[in-house]
Length: 379
Image (cartoon, rainbow, N blue to C red):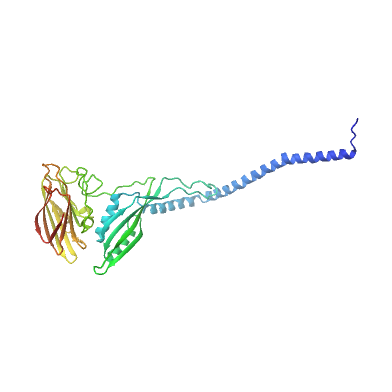
């Protein structure tokens, strides 16, 4: 049986075939080509943006170099205001300098560990040619260390203390202050919390603070590695341990400290010393009245001031009390004879308070031979 297809059906089949060919050509041909064209156009647009950006940079290359140098100088100048690290010794030196220069009594000091505040390098670029990439790579980090002081001082000294902290060589901030006022004695007291900031890493080396004129070899100024029992007492009703004016260190000749060291608190250049296995003559001279005082002293042949500085200003401000602390130690053996034979000439209108710490109970290193003027002992 023959299948007869009418002319009408033939036309319909041809129409359907034509439509199918057009559809297949669009679906597998034109659409893919169009998608590729769109992709290429998008890439062209993206590259055109980068090209325009790079072309603008190329046209302004010299200006960018000048700006980079300028901003690097600004950055380095700002970075220089931040120390490159922390140490307990540096904090103690800052504390003693604060007391020595202003006459404020810092009764207690509480130091916290450093905490990480900021990690450098976590900044991504919005620049068209580097979008999303890190602007720079570095190992620098920003830290904060907080110290709290319990203080006592006059009102003017209180203002000077705030200015001293804010104007210090490295960046400090005052986080909290509380105070009370004693009208009878005209004294302010309270607590002040300050923070120091440092930036570590890269090629920023931290240089430990040096304490001149004393051969210590230890982390603590008055604790000797060869005399581990020499520790500072913390409980003192008169504040001598934290607010003394003069310090005398006594140890054996074989210690890593000189056997006799004498100096004003906070003034490393004022220290004189000797290292002998015997009693070294020590003389302390204090004079003055009504807030105007002078001081000089000697250890053996060493004098403060020395002959070259005889004309220097010997003005001395002991504050509310005049205090000498003696950091001594027990004898190491029967052959250990090191000590001091002390003469005190106090011609001032103040009493010299003397606190002796850790002296040998049987054979004291601290021996007062002559006293002129008012002296009071605390042991």
